[in-house]
Length: 318
Length: 241
Image 1: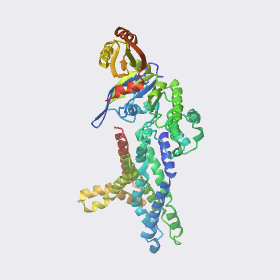
Image 2: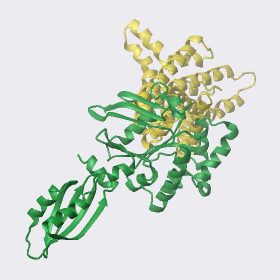
Image 3: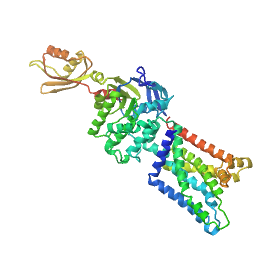
Image 4: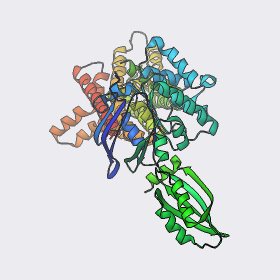
């Protein structure tokens, strides 16, 4: 039973070795009940491995993994009862019909016989499987297959949903549908979902975990991560009679408090443009003052928050 | 237990939903009938007995069992549904036992299809003679027990591989070894020979086929089957490392 004081997921110092490969190097994080967490990372970073360990498919090399307070290694079956899992590549029993597959999963999940049909129907409705309920799974499009996998993951009404790249390979319309479904599910359940589609993580999750090379490199809300840094494109021109060049301006900008980097300095017909990187403090006023001091005109200054993609690339570049 | 039965049912119906099932059954039946009528020279012999067929059951089953079990784990590993199965709240032994029961169901169907042979032979017995149903009953029982051991070995082979063909071949080798070790006994020194004979599945089958169900033969089959299933569970668990 999950009480309000128990975290839904509690991973402590998780290590996993595959032969000589050290796939997970001391991953630790906790997810409280009701949170929707986006799990990002490049391929091979350890997202799927972490999820496979959480769902009891793979055994950890060391560290503790708890779901709803239950140790997954010690009592895997109990832990698995609380989880609805959609694996990467969504494997399904192709030789079964949709209806058969859902019945099978419901039986295996020991859904009470009295409510079984209504649970299946409710999962079918939520996932929009009505039109294909009687079809063979092998005949379904990728979008429908994904929805069958999702239906199988939710029909026993688990407290925790673990979704490994639920929108991979879907077309934009299908992605929107699945995303909306996840948003809806996120209102009642705890969700841990991994994705490559960063905008999707931003749209659905209240918390982002970024893993790279087997280690967590970021753990924060999407907003906090993206305000951490920004780029400022600035274009200046010297006043008539004054003189400057790229190198001089580069040094001036580098001195301005709040500016972390100065890049891409160029001259074009007497105007100079640069791309500056700023941290949490906004240096635009200081930049203005600096240009006034030098007697240069500011022709343009535009600030853009770093996208999650930029953060991702920066944190996961090896 | 209910989950075990769910798995057994699923495997059983899933098997018969595919055309491979009918090919396997057909080949098994054809081989059985060829063995009996042609190799056994039934018509030439003039004896209303299915003894010959039943004596050759071990060889027939030793091909049938791996053919039935080859896909049970290997296919799930290949398609990835193994991951779905292993993340359902069900213990490994339940999965193994469920698949075992499903496969035994398939074997029972295959054996049932051979029943017309003894049935029709019993109809042509000459006046005054009876058809020995005791031997037939004993032999089918022996066949089921033998099959349970073969199926458990076949399951083990399937659990070791992603490839059905490899699963079949390894299963065949395992079943053949445990059966044919009896014949190797001929060339071994006395003490070892006795152990080899006792370890052979064929030896115990012969005992039961005579119509005598000895508890020692039962014990052999039950322990051999149990060992096969335990090995399978271990192989499945190894897949999680």
